[in-house]
Structures are given as structure tokens and as C-alpha cells.
Length: 457
Ligand code: ASP
Ligand code: MG
Image (tube, rainbow, N blue to C red; front, top):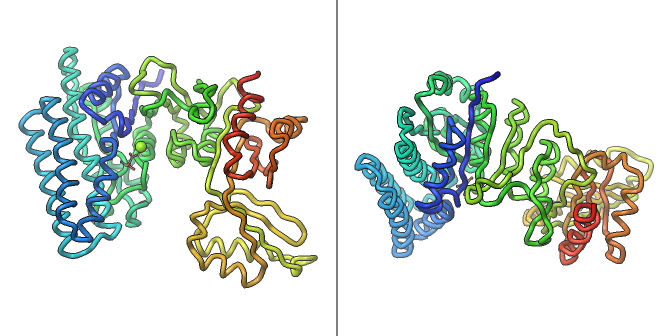
């Protein structure tokens, strides 16, 4: 049998305080993690962003207050974890780096994405340093300290392009650079801790992969190392059939396919960063999602193939949608209209979620933030009449054989009964049936559909 190689990622709440960090370390020991990837302590990335903004505006007192908040939180963690003098020293250097960066921003009034990435990277760098120490201690307490924990600077491994704030990783470079680590892992004498979310350009300038990007980092490391499992430890016990705040009847899913999970992630289920699944899918690495705070709960396994394939596995909502309808009589009996439309969207780098067409019009849904770009509607109105409807939400039923199941549409419409459905999308995928509705009705619809398709079966 293949030797297990486990990559575990712990999110911000799992790094939230000393108890959570020690709990995460206990899990890393129990799971025999070979590489742990961590997020910044919960809220720290936001505080660092705020620090950058205040520094740019030269609001010095407020900037200092935020800095103090960040420092005292991490100092407290270090004290509670009783870290060594060396670790304390390294942490101190990071505090100084934050101070210098803030001063630099004040002087230069430069808060470009490039500067922001360097500042944000400190969050993960501090938490990973502390976590490494927590892990060492738990190993020591269990007399397992023949395994040495090494702290890696992700910026020496995860090399990216220079799109600051949403940098694209270079997988081949990562694969080459982790080679010596694989050898050490197989010696059974070493395990590693690194930072999620951050990387660096070829020249060594710090970059980030986009908010919530730690999952993605962990998946990339898992792929590069040829991991046998990727574990995402968070603050909910797995992926749920729908948002439990909307439906108290929501249940944790024990197994789900990659395809269904990416549909869910795209529709805004916050459990996994949407890009996380790509590396796992490429290498067919099973992904576990579980709660650090309830480690004995079953959690969810995401796999390439799952035995149980229910018609409807989960229901997701994507709020803040607008429906754009473009019409022109020119479209009648002609061609190229869709091309013209999609070209405009492509030029503006706006992605469309659902589309329906008739002979003289095309309707499509977008995130409402896309309309902040006034030029988009302007460009579209050059060749079609544009009508905008807002305050909408997409409700998606996610499952299997959706477009091959007779009677499904009837059951869906029976459940939503007296609520107006503005548009439906069915057929493009076996895994998705989507309804566009008024945003204020979305929760009600989710509750009804959840009752019909998930609770009452
Ligand atoms: N710390 C980063 C963020 O808050 C990355 C992550 O947590 O995944 O966005
Ligand atoms: Mg996160």
C-alpha cells in the first residue's frame, strides 16, 4: 500500500487563541500530518489591511492602536504557549517589520496591492511560527519528539506571477522545490509547518493568492508533494446540505464528489475556497473537511467518485445577483449577437453565471458588483437595449442526474408554488438546477426545497 502523506490545513479560528492552537496541534499529531498549512489568526488579515489603509491616510494614532492590538494578541499567544526565546525573538522581528512597513506607507503614501501583500503576509508568518511551537510541545508531551518540526517560509516554495492580491502559482516550480522535503518526510523524522495564502515572485517579492487562499495553498502543496489526503480543519463539522443558519434541518454531508463540491463552492458555500479542488482533482487526492473544535465528528470527505449519489445533495444560494436582459430586433435571423455580448464581458473580465436566450433577447445573471463598472453597461448598450433587474438571488439544487430525472422540475415548482421564479437554468450540467428569484424570497425557497428534497426523503 501507498505510504500515507497527509497535508492538513488549519483556518483562522483554529489559530484563534492558545487553546485552539493546541487543539489544532493535537489533531496534527493524531492525524500524523506531514505538512501543516496555516491561516493567520482569525481577524488578523483584516486588521493588517486596516493598518495599511490607516497608514496611507497618515492616521497615525489609529494605525498605532491597530498595531498594538495585533502585537498584544500575538504576544499573549506566545506567552500562553510558553514559546522559546528564539521563537519570541523571531516574533519580535516580525513586529518590527510591521512597524517599518507602516512607517514606509505613511511616508510614501503607497498602499498598492504589492505593499498590501507584504503586510498581509505577516499574519500567516506569525501564526505559523506560533503553531510550530505548539506542535513541538504536544509531540514532546506525548514523547513523540523524535519527529522534528521544521518551519518553512512558503515564499521560498510557492513561486507565483506578479499579480499582487491574486497571484497565480507556478506549480512546476513548487514541485521541484518540495523534492528535498518529500525525502525528509519519508524518513519519518521530520514534519513541516508553512503559511497558507502567501507566495513570492521569482525575484522574491511577497505575493498573496487572494482572500481565503490558504485552502488553495494547502491543496497546491498537497499536489506537489503527492499527498494521499488533504485535510481542511475549520470551525464547522464538514460541508452541510445547506446553510444551517437558514435551515436548522441542515445536515453534514459524509461524502460528496469533487464536481458537486465545486458547484457548491461556486454558489457561495463558504466551506472551501473554490480553487482548492483543482489541485486535488488533478491528482485525485481525497479532501477531508472537519471541525477543529469537534474533531470526533465525522466531517465530510470529498472524493473523485462516491458511491451514494442522491438526486439532490445540497442547496446553495448566491445572493446579490442582477439580471441583465439585452434585446435587439437585429438579432432576428442573424448570427454573431452572442459573440458580441460575450466579447464585451470578456473585455471587462466579468463572469456570467446563468444565461437564457430567446430569438431577440439574451438574459444573464451577474454579481451585482459587476455593475459598479459603468462602462460595461455603456458598451453593451451600443448594440442592444439593456434592461437591469436587481435584488435577485440564485438558488441552486446540486446533486446527480439532475437533467436525466423525469418529474424533477414538477417537484421543484410544486415546492416553490406561489413564489415567482424569474428564470431557470437546467440542462447544462447533470449536477445543477438553478432558479433565479427575488432575494427576499431566497431563504424561504431554500427552506421549502430542503424540506422536499433533503429532509423528507
Ligand atoms: N488569512 C487569509 C484571509 O483571511 C487567508 C486565509 O485565511 O485563507 O483571507
Ligand atoms: Mg479562511
